[in-house]
Length: 55
Image (cartoon, rainbow, N blue to C red; front, side):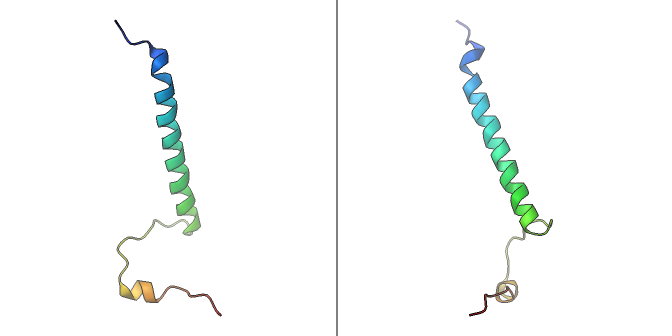
């Protein structure tokens, strides 16, 4: 017995929504970082030179 395509429709919708959400979060992080890619593996120098809030 073949599988009706209507049963796969919700799975397709969920997969598409996960893709849209991932792309939106990635774009949001890219825009918040002044249109530069995220940096990975920051060393001690990078961590100490981050701006700290004034008290």
